[in-house]
Amino acid sequence: MADGFTIQIEGDLAERLKAAAEAAGRPVEALARDMLEQHLLEEGDELGPADLAYDPETAEDARIVDEMIRTGGGTPWDIYEERMKRFGRPEPKG
Image 1 (cartoon, helix red, strand yellow):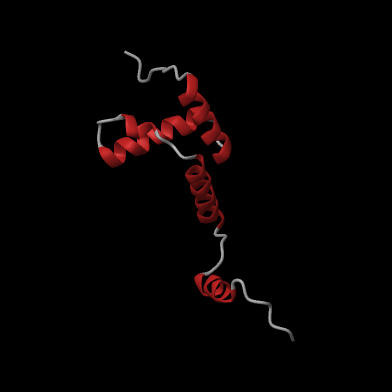
Image 2 (cartoon, rainbow, N blue to C red):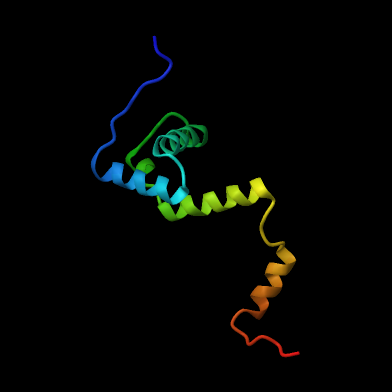
């Protein structure tokens, strides 16, 4: 018996998955496999129609966070907090 299997994804779901993979900068097969694995880890073995809704914008956010964790990049909170306090205000002169 084989360890794995192949599935066919067509139509709107295939297009949405391709868009999400492109937004995440990942191969569509890897993204689909990771999405299924993550769901099964979080929710158990029961999949429903709502489980197939995937937001490419969320995928992009996750990609950015993963990259920041991997590289140690990002902006420290104290610097970010100061920037937010000044947001929308003119830059001080001097």
